[in-house]
Length: 99
Image (cartoon, rainbow, N blue to C red):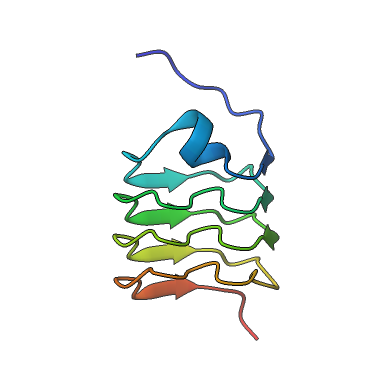
């Protein structure tokens, strides 16, 4: 399998579900991305874990309707968009900035 070299620092609106990874994504880790656009991971039905330590902007509905999402590591996000985790019924670990 070819190795992917990451040069992305922004995931735009609907990018993951509509253009790149479809609905089969289970885990997403990236320490380069700093911004995630509206609906970027919306309806990734199998997504369980997200590790995005350098994200500082989390837009609206980013993880909405991700029913399998259990953990999200977002330690540098000061503000979370509207309904960013709507429908994430299994979400038990949400790592956000310390107050």
